[in-house]
Amino acid sequence: MSRADTRSVVLNALATKRRRDVAELESELLAAGQECPCDSQWLVKAGVAAAKTMGVRLRVRAADAWAFKSVETLTTFLDGLVDQKDAA
Image (cartoon, rainbow, N blue to C red; front, top):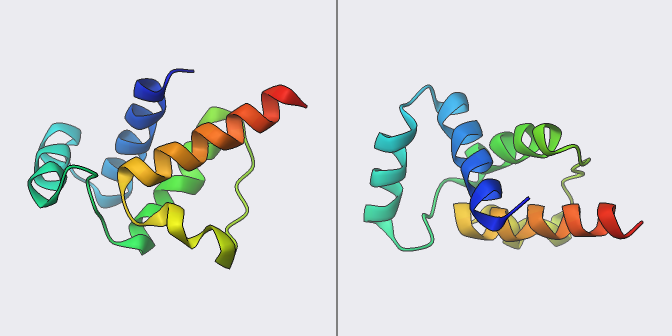
């Protein structure tokens, strides 16, 4: 799965959780910053849903808090989980 695909899964999950249109939400998040910052509570919910869609298990730990600051950091985190799964 490419980074763009992962980002799309994250944005779709976030939009679903927030009951928003994906394009509208992405535009709003981009207006807030290039990394698409978002409330971490929403990103955790979207991250769990996205991970499930991607076939990886997401265990939210305090050490992983950095990943739930923006759409881009969550995308990077999930890409890493997929790489770990593929390497195993």
